[in-house]
View: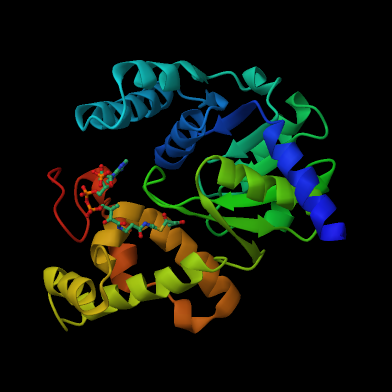
Length: 298
Ligand code: CAA
């Protein structure tokens, strides 16, 4: 009975959301803005840098253009989706949002800064969500008034394609917040799975040690990068091998997540020295043009 009424509240809460704010117009923020707009929500997309904002909007437009070319959507539908996304470099433009998702750099001080600025602008009951891949939601919630309105929504790259959203319940997240966020994930055509606020949640706690071990295999000369990936594609039916996946995620992001996991769980998550070297050399994967594989950029 209690559960039913919570579910109703949540459905009502998610249905009442008309406009969401997304802070950070990078790969994840742009992807989130795109799927939300496709689901009929109005989106205010914020980035502090004009050039990052433009890059994000160009990427969204290119994704939608691809769908037009494949005749999955019409020109008119593309224009409708784009018209629902308002880009801005001014965080004050979030004032009328019904829920805000931050998707900025994976750094606790940066995320706390965003949360405190946003909470000064939006109404006190507005749900604040983080797309963090490894930072504690409870720690983030502690930086704002009404921490019960904070939860995590961990999206996966590429956001328009991957169905999963890990919904993270912080220590103080209310039932209503979590249920509303679960319902919102469904509304934007994702499949939410609720997880506790533990380091790396579930997906990264499992994915990152595999990627790290693949890097150890490479550095120990067990096989070439191509063959390590081939083994996991053909032997475990993964859509892409672990090193290609690391290149997709970004090697700096992989290292950051492994450092959090190493700090919490100890030696089994120790980042491979080769990963540190690649990051130090600026070989970050697809975004820098080269990682474990060549992506046409050096
Ligand atoms: N944006 C939008 N659509 C994209 C896309 C992108 N960046 N990349 C691929 N797609 C679409 C393609 O248009 C294509 O669509 P249709 O089938 O409708 O035509 C579809 O995805 C398949 O793409 P491709 O045929 O080009 O290539 P593929 O079949 O090899 O799939 C892939 C590409 C979807 C990336 C697939 O290889 C895959 O699922 N890889 C694993 C990705 C993964 O594990 N992501 C999670 C990373 S971990 C994470 O994100 C969390 C974190 O915190 C680090």
